[in-house]
Image (cartoon, rainbow, N blue to C red; front, side):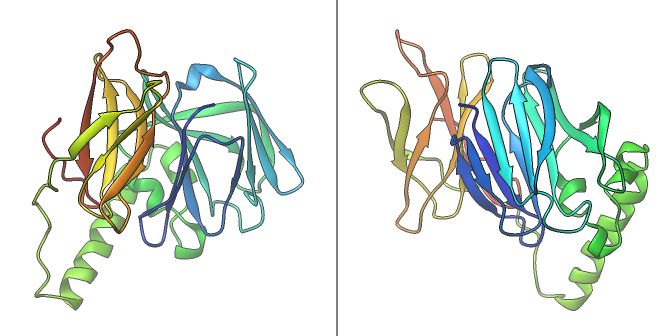
Length: 232
């Protein structure tokens, strides 16, 4: 099953990391499905759930996607072909007959795109990334002015330690800086697993596909500011 990451639009922290077929949203979020957009077959609505069907037959049900205002949640796909915002509804919440794929460098614009905050996510699809970026910069300046003593975090987290692979090659286990994100990439640089270090400094990251037959991977830690550790 594809790995799914849910990131809060309010706090920008990872709320969920799962390869389950059902994902429950509890607040305004960016939902990132870690497969290529070319794997997407269809997105439909079932009640207040968004139902994502992949070409390999997998079905991911995102519960409560339509509970909140239009634009409260955003869906992205990330694979070998890059990162894309998957626009499958119009501004009224109606399912589009043809899905629109909007390329992104990262999910930051979507984290700040929330109709409640007055920044429409459809501005991204309309090619108004400059306006979104200006809005983000303005928000950052306001935060800086309200807390002049705060410094920009440019320090990379500590590299993961005690990293081992379980016997069947499906999980990477180790120690890291609490709260940091762990990213596992294969020998070709493809992301095959992500997870979060718990408060005790431990992490267990499911990887897909499994690392077998001598296949190797790099493991890094990434903090909320986007700083990355050296790979191990």
